[in-house]
Picture 1 (cartoon, one colour):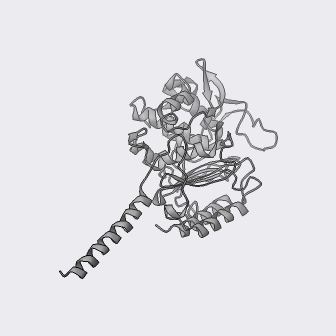
Picture 2: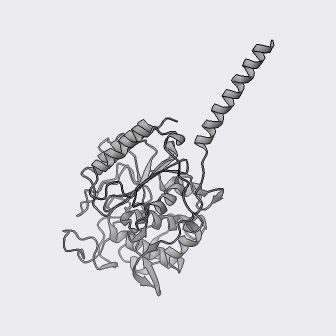
Length: 370
């Protein structure tokens, strides 16, 4: 090789090394310290113009909170945060993923099994719910209902009575139908509290939210059992979007936080996969419009195919999953993109939220460069 060719060859090697190192840097997974590390979208492989178009679309389909509490994480970097991303309030039914995570940790620890019968730990369930397992509670297939009508005057359904821990006759035999029912989740939380003999909040603080740096967050109780406050199994976690993004980032990384396995990979994979077959019918309850068959895991929503042949979030990646709560609170994990998106607010859902978020994620996908 002559001198000029040798110089050219070395130059090409150096250029290739720079390009490759840049790609590696872009795709390296990092974890936040006390705060998220801020980076711009382009440095994390996201086209800034198309990214902004996607954000504008979501904002145009949101109510008055818009994107003010929107947080986007790519590769562990904060590439977008609304000006109220630190606002703390109820995340509503996103809280259900905290409840099922308590279940997962107890299974990881060998304390209980997924198919253990819940009445073993809660005698109130023995008469009408002897066949209900932890799996049934985590998948909304228990058929559980509490005595009484809703405590809320502005709704016309039986869920959310003042006596959620007093069992009423079941809507259906366990595992034979799906019913999104908050009283069932409240009873789920009560049973888990009996197993723990401590609050679910304190348990998660020690095992998960402390290690991932979520800081101070609250989970308000719904009565007590054995003298222990029962953190409401269906709602009442209060946190901000930056904190909730850590929760999503832990799940996206399959329970591993910067080298420490906090939740087993096996549980994460099960919790965020479809656990309610599309062939299971939706029970004829007051809340039958909430359809989980084909797209519900262990209290996580999954972008699976429903009985009507449509994806839960049309246009979004099949592997994505999300926590969803009242007032348009969302925590979305998209493993294919190493991305977590949190949208929080106190304003209400957009019209056709599944279609809106499917289109939004499709637009985000169009912005992904690498």
